[in-house]
Image (cartoon, rainbow, N blue to C red; front, top):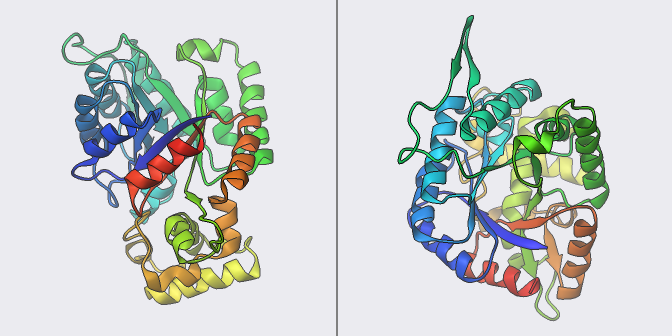
Length: 355
């Protein structure tokens, strides 16, 4: 299985991309969560100039954040700096919208956005709508300005649901999901993608010019001999993923109701600790600061073993290889980790584990 890394945009991110390339990792991704992290297009421009081989991904942008012309311009500009190395993840804006106190967009709008990006980034014209006004648009300057000749890889974010997987099938894109380590769930996503592709009149793979890949984002903690799998080091390495799910549950009562008693209690403690409620209009300002950053020691008790085991890879080398093999057999092409404690060391662990 291939390996990669995903991080928040920050000054010096290009140095981390260089380290990832030197370690032989396949891809380097940056989040697109405007009110929580820096800008991915700025960060990846620096990474593009500092590297020569590693693929560079945005994980993920959304029509609820950027217009298709603006996003396509950023992507094609990156493609001019790193020809053929750009990956664009697209989604409904689940987290990026929630950090604004808003809700994600629809699968239909996501599909239209993806289609427009594919057309524009391949040098084709596309339909652009503002209200009742509709125009055909295309890049008016290419050459030194943007690169529409080399293909850009597109992947659709799916949180385990078939609607996004169907969009991927119809548009000929790959899939990406965070913390989805259940092989059965991935089989279902791939089935939904395949069925949608088979029902599409045109060959969806011809839209992209590249094979559709599946990516899973997680955290990895390789245990030392005799180490507690739920001790502080393991909680610190995986806590950001667990806290992201708890924040989502605290922001989404219908989801929280589906959790078990222990997890539900953790959500209630989080809300109390942050001084907000699941219905407060400003809850996004209390739940999402330091989103996907290193957790505070006082929050370690919220990092439940059940959620660590579900969302992250924690174990001995043999344990991890067994789980990774099962994911590979379920059709996962690349494992992306989110390092927060010591990124170079965590990246080296990943590279060594799968060498």
